[in-house]
Image 1 (cartoon, rainbow, N blue to C red):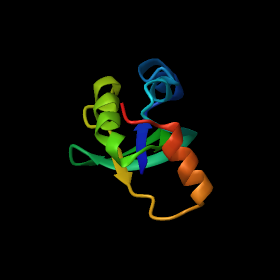
Image 2 (tube, rainbow, N blue to C red):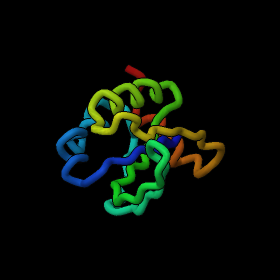
Image 3 (cartoon, rainbow, N blue to C red):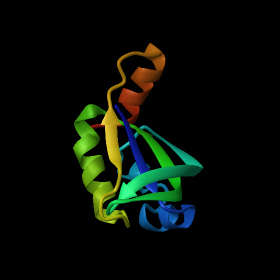
Image 4 (tube, helix red, strand yellow):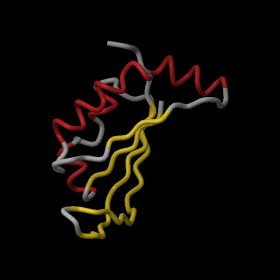
Length: 105
């Protein structure tokens, strides 16, 4: 399973998510941090522009709700973007590594 989330700044990400906390809690096999993305979105009827940090998180389907709950608990946004989508196929070696790296708690 791949999950996406955004944070307003790298400093905010480092403070609220403590950078390695998702990994330390064994909620992900891998986290990619894209340090600068441009975002356009509707908020309270207006189009807004922002620069954000994008997190790409790979985890087991069985851990997605724990990951969502954790991000919601520490995220500074009222409605943080947390979306997930299945990994339908890929390198079997990578998928096995990912499965082995994250154990259900």
